[in-house]
Length: 84
Image 1 (spheres, rainbow, N blue to C red):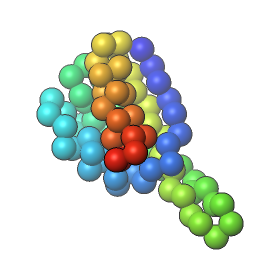
Image 2 (cartoon, one colour):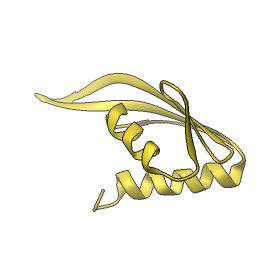
Image 3 (cartoon, rainbow, N blue to C red):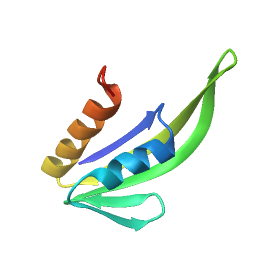
Image 4 (tube, helix red, strand yellow):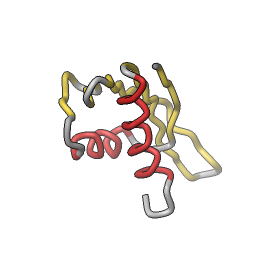
């Protein structure tokens, strides 16, 4: 299963989140493995709304469907929930 999305979250913040998860290994700068899910982070051009700068990151997930969905659930809960 593959997912590729552009998120309005800084690459550093996503990287710190991924490093905090169990079952996660950093393979290289911007590439992680969570169980059987490979996660790639690529900085994207910032987005501006007036003078407000919004950092953006391309998040690419690939691997076993169950592991991709599990990581994606954690990711969405962390960054899209009211408490995130």
